[in-house]
Structures are given as structure tokens and as C-alpha cells.
Image (cartoon, rainbow, N blue to C red; front, side, top):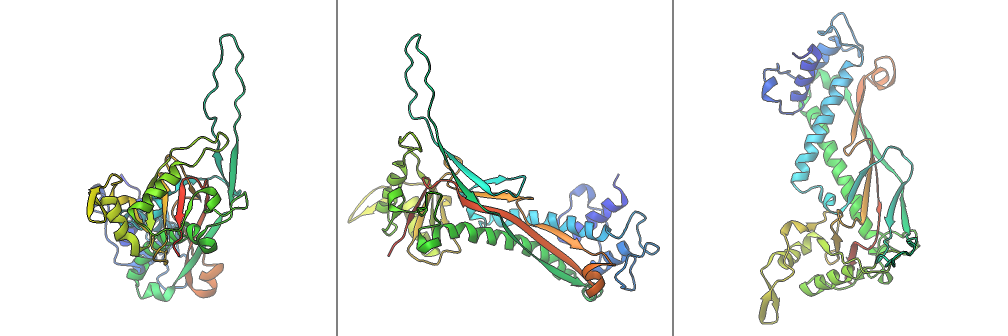
Length: 360
């Protein structure tokens, strides 16, 4: 059995475009945002105040309307984010390490060095202490957000279709915001990326992760070799990691697909088997990249993370609704405000799993 307000919440979810489970498909439909406002607040005369004597629900109070709309919008944002992800709009998720944090202290991304080969211990001899080290890159939090105002006039005109679009647009904006932030790491400082803790750019010849050649089967093989030869912090031993993904502007997507998917590799008039053949989903066109020539390679972040994305308060933007009648915008502007807030941090964990080619 569902409580009265639980059924109202289901009706609001449906009003904002969410599909309901079959078990609650008999939930009554609301005609629009105006009916919802009237039923929950009892404010049929649009004074912008809660009128308990005319509200349709005994347990409703001055915050009920905000709570119902907030819950529904957050659900729609999560559902929309999943849809956009399946369509490929969150391309960056494939190439980053994601982590949730419990405070707004600066994020410390730690790359831990290895021990190399374990030393041999002779019979009866003491074990030796192993030497290890790490490097830390620091990322500050970024706060994004804004608000939209729903005036009493909009509610009275029953502009439900406009209200229904809000959470979907917020989800799209959040994904685009993160997309541009991750893409920007590769294009900062004329394409060599941000300076790291050692005061050297992310992509630099001294790191062995910066190229200058156009994308081809041969230059992709060179990128594979360059990443494979990267050495472990502290031990100096080769990591033996390989790039899994190639990032390109849309102009190079076809070239990359030919390299990754074609069964043969062209060489003059002779065709050889494409021994570097991979999967089409490992070719990622970055929407924000406008240079038609530059490209990059990234290792699987589950094996060797190069870029980190940290979240505070969730991986989708939060939604808050302010509708207090005695204070704020409802009092001064007859306006119910929907605010969104998104806190995240994007930074470099380690340069070794990353490779960039800046083509002149």
C-alpha cells in the first residue's frame, strides 16, 4: 500500500516524463503543472502562499511542492544521463578514472611507484626493506550551476511542456560541461596540456608522450611503442602498457576507424594483415576538438589511469527548488526557482598512460 503523497510523487514523476512500473501504472494522471500546484499548495488564487485549508492532501505543507518537484527532476536527470551515455555523449567516461569524495578538500591524485624485481633472500638472511615512492597531482574543485524561474504566470498558463524539458536540459548541460573540461586537458597551452607538479607540461618530448606526425597505421604503431616503453616510477622498469583508445576530431574519425577496424593494412600496392586491428568502439571522436589534425591515445583507465574525475554530492547535477512564500523569489518575484549545482574536479593522475600528437 502506498501513502497518499507517495502516489502524488508517482504522478509528478509521470508528469515530468518518467515511465512508471507496471505495478503502479494505475496512478492517476495530472493534467499539468497548474493542477499539481493547486492540489499541493491549495493556492488557487495564486497568492504564492501555502493554504492548508484548500490543499488536497492532509500531510502537505509549505515544502511539499518543492520536495515533489525536486525528487522527480533528480530522477529524470539520472534517466536522461543514462540515455545520453548510451548514445555516446559521455565519451570521456571510457578514458577516465571516476571517484566520489566526501569533502571539498583539494583532490590529490596519487601515482604510486613500483618496486621493480623483488630481491633474492639467501637462506637464513634478513629481508631487506623495499624502496618505493609516489607522485601527487592536485586538482581543485569546480562548481557549476544556475537557476531557472517558474513564475506564477507560467503555472497559471500551465506551461507543463517547458517544465518537463528542464531536467533533461540540465542533464545534457552537465555532460557537455564535463566533456569540455576533459577535452580541454589535451588542448591547453597550445596542445601540450597543463603543467604538472614537476613544472613540465603534460605532453612533452622529455616524457616520451608527445608526437608530431599525422594519424596513420605507422604513427599509431609508434604511439603504441612509445606508451609501452614508459617506465615505472621509482623502479625504472618498463610498464608495458598499451593505448586502448584513440581520440580524434571528427575529421579524423574515418581514418582512425580504418586503422582500427580494417582487416588489411595498406602499404604501397601491397596489402598486409592489420595486426593492430581493434574494436570500433575504441575510436572516440571528441566533440570539442576543432583542430582537424591532432589526435591522442589513452590506455585503459582500469589498468593505468591517466585522467581523474572526482565528484562531490553525486555524479549528476543536483536540483533544488525554492518556493517559500514569505522569503526569497516567491515573495519578491512570484517566482518558484529551480537551482542546479554540480561539483566536480578534473585533473591528471599520471602522464604515462597518455599520448598526444600535435600535427603542424
